[in-house]
Length: 341
Image 1 (cartoon, rainbow, N blue to C red):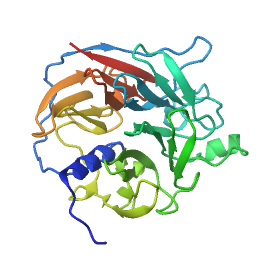
Image 2 (cartoon, rainbow, N blue to C red):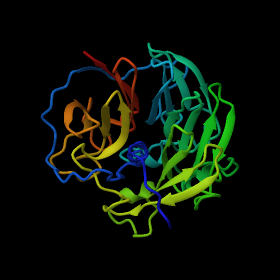
Image 3 (spheres, helix red, strand yellow):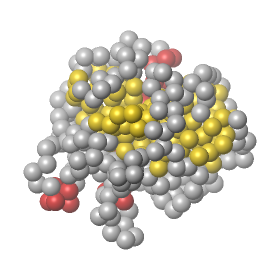
């Protein structure tokens, strides 16, 4: 496959989208310093949980997708359709926190005070993983997987969903679907475990694929790639494979074990929700690390609000125009807001 030279902006976009797949990070800049960056100042005041559900609306599901509206203040989130009551005691909620069989609308717009302004997307997703707002205010939602065997048995008549990226207008009208709902495969017709998306300034789409690459026993042919599409969904090419070399995706560096990346005003924000939790990363503490985009120097760490066993702290994150940081947390099933002092 012929590879064209990548601009710096495109490399940064690829790094950001790759981190959307937990455990996957590209290496546009070489940095071999793996010393934990734990003892850093924290110039933020944290409110956890943050955001208001109506009293009759139940409880939030697992959070992974957070984005800022183009007004710089409103927040878009996608949760996994409310807290699933079917999780057996002691079992991991990872395979239970899903939208399979749910009538919950998982895409929400919140105002700066955390009140829900609108919700949509009911019945379209299984495992919402990330959300992205483009410069035209369209809302993109990534659905990482299809129904598992337990869910298929429980909901045999459910419409196919999963392994897709869905584009909405700001009011919830579906404008485009990339991938075949419920089918894992290769572009142009299908996607495999899409994790995240970014839209380049020219409208081109970069989609990260391959959530299973984080597993220690992942086979060499496990999907771990970036797929590139035009703004109207025409497939251009895919690149990358499982590994830790150039154009390979898997290994974390001095920002911890990245699950989400956000860029704003010369800073890079990196969420680490699994170090010393479900993923071995000895010596590292979880939380959100903030650094200089140009140099990679890590400046601050916002600690994990809970430090619970398993997945904790933010997986998805976004930063508003005032510098406040929003973290979507899967394990605690909550949205946190970190106010910059």
